[in-house]
Length: 326
Image 1 (cartoon, rainbow, N blue to C red):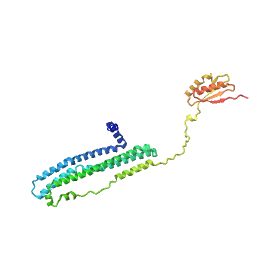
Image 2: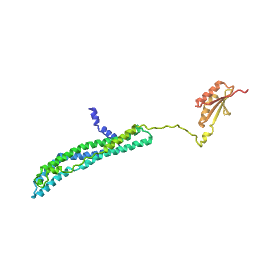
Image 3: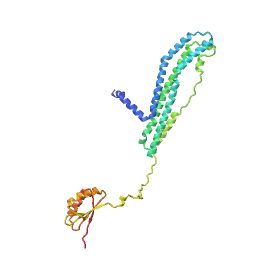
Image 4: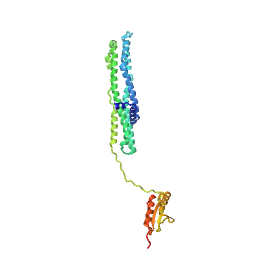
């Protein structure tokens, strides 16, 4: 019961309809308007055949019984006029309904074509059959087709019922009028009602075209396109930037045998002050290189301390050990 009430929730219904329209595209919106118009006219015809049609037959019979014509020809013409008025009312909006029933499959075919255009556009952009990328185009190709066929099928059954009611009302109007005058001129009611030209049966190939397009989309989605991957090759630039040809700046840290460190053959610092010196150098020269040179008599502890200071500053220096002379 809770699930049923949830399905009847207006918010849920609005979300379902909105998702359906978004998935089907603008063609589905046109289909819904056509469907609403078709069923509005079908409802009007049903009300007419159920209520207004029989009343019209009774009204025409009263007019026929109150006729004041003397000649048989005038009576026959008056009878034909009354029957024609009934037939005109019976046929009102029937051609529009038939046209809408024929249009809905064509609109579904239009949705199929627009969906296929989106599928081909995805193939052009991605260069492969990516099913996830083509899902939107496929939905816009299938949903309008389904909607158009469903509307057309329901319309065909309704139109068949309306045609039958049309024949019944026309037959009733013909039977309720005195036919002696008409028979005198050789026009029996049976001959009049059944002597019309019958419509030839036609095969509507629109659903067949829809099926062909949908099969084509299916083969496109399931096909595997060959994507050849070559060997990537990067050639050097003809005019390399000046920064790439110029050697990076460097800073030399020389560890002396007395335990101090000489920076670029200039100032002398304590080994524990190497880290801020390197950080200042890297801030000014991000591409700079740090070189660590140890004297032959320098202690291992001092060299290791300088190396740790450099690594704490985020630099892995190049190490050079000086050899003793002789």
